[in-house]
Amino acid sequence: MAKKRKIKNMTRVEHKRALEKAVGLQTAAIREMSGQVFLPNLKQRGGKNNGDIYERTVRAGKNLLEKCHNLPGSRSERIVSYYSRKDVQQAMYRYARGRKICVLRNFHPMFGGSQLRKPEDILPIMVFYSQDTKLYPSLHGTVSRRTSDNRSLCDLVLEVDFKMSRATSFSLSRPIVNLLQDLGVEFRMKFSGNASPHIIIPAEAFPEKWRKISECRGLYARLLDFFRTQIKLPKRLDGSFRNPSHFLRMPYSINENTGLVSLPMTIDDFYRFSWEMARPETAEIMEHWWGDVPEDAPEQTESLIEMAFGQRKVFAVDAKKRKPALETLLPEMPDTLGSPVQIGMVKAGEEIAARGVALMEEPLLQDALRELWAVPMDGEQDEAKRWQHAKAIAEKHGVRKEDMRLMSQWSDKAGALAYYSRRDVQEAIYSYVQGRCVRMEGTDEYLTLNEPQDIFALAAYMLGGGVAPAFRCTNALYSPESGEMIACDMVIQADQALGKSVALLLKSFDVPSFVLYNGGKQMRIVIPYEVLETATDLQTPLRQLPNLANRVARHLRRMLKGDDGITVSLYEGSTPILYSLADSGERVNLQARLEDVPRLSPDAASLDAVDDMTVIEPFMPPDAGEEAVRFFKDIML
Image (cartoon, rainbow, N blue to C red):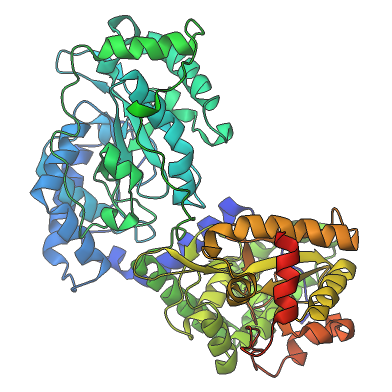
């Protein structure tokens, strides 16, 4: 074999596609069921010889319903149980009337542009598309619609989307909700099913002169620009909804990624929203949510239009009219992948691992790879060009190009996967992340580890997606029941030179902490939450941590003269997991004592050098800490 090669970094889009493909491996067999291999052309917009695609899909879904045997608690049982509800079907159909629809995330009008014909069609359509096991089946409808008197109208949708935090999305949306309330504008709200609220102003709430599609395009663009001036992160306001042909996930549809319901909300729900409300098993139907718009609604919306066009100033809000200001909330537990998705990822990883081991025993594949690496190229930047020859080489040796790529990745990261297969490594990582949310390299989604042995399967899953098998986790710990934050570490990050100085400073004050070291350019010093609570004697420590972190950062920068080299992170941070691999997949994130920092070297973090999983106890001992207390009190003064 040729020497090790560096895997080309994938874009997020490419990696997401690779991950979805891996999840699909475990249930590919369902597509082989008799009569169920047909999938409509998703981009088809009709045609003389295509037949009635809508009816064919409904019939195929009904046939699949008869053949499927749903196991209690399974993904398919959850889908069928939810979409079988008559109240769900009626509510979705009520909103869908007059709208073009699409399924999953194929944002083209489907079924020749046909609308939903009957409420009871929803179940077989959703069951039919549940064959695409990468995603939950969901329905989307255009924001524009045709009324019973054949007029074309378009609703205005406002979405402030911050996928990393549901709490942040809702917080950023509050100024918009408050302003609409103050003006008396008629609007509806629903949860996206992922992170953000959807705020919808029905077309009937606008004055008659603005309701035509030709008129509302320009108005909605102006309104979106206006609302951007009202929020802290204007780029987070989705501008695509100014297009009347844009699709919006239907109310009561399950989100294709999270498995949560796109649930309508009241104002009170908006201020107290919890993801538990959106579980398919507990979701409640809100009667008359998409009901008639009051006759005087256009008058109230006129005030909003005047503001957007600069004809009226934004008035000072009367606090008595508003919802009482809420106490500053701690960030909620980030969205995590649902159990069915996570189980699918673990099973897909197990299949990828088994496939990789089998491929390593194939001599024809070995020969094909040797020939591929023998193709002359100039530099690593031509790695992609090398793979352009792979198809011809694969055909010559009678192997699959996809197997060649997987074997290449597997051989490059064989050491990393052997490391994750160690039981002591799995137990050490699993113990550290209890209560924390875990994120895999190359993804934005979080998950919670269910079993120590899942770590190896998820590492193989990442490798199947073409990235190094590395894990990160939140600095904060959360209650598994409520999702509320219960603890949070403080993580100080600096370059090697400053990091050593920070470690020595904390050591001199006996501040119990440890160093997270992987031989890279950056060093992280972790001060566990128990230390902060004990040493600072904070009455409400979690809420006071941001102030403490700012003071610690200023103090360290002042003492060490490292203005640009020191950062302190709390809830917003995600940190490499102790004893997981670094992003390169070739070094380990070691735990080191403060006194050992001067002796650390990159070689100490290599895979071959790590043979001891003894976890250092960094917490505040009961008979120590006077110096640490004095350190924090000096900072707080």
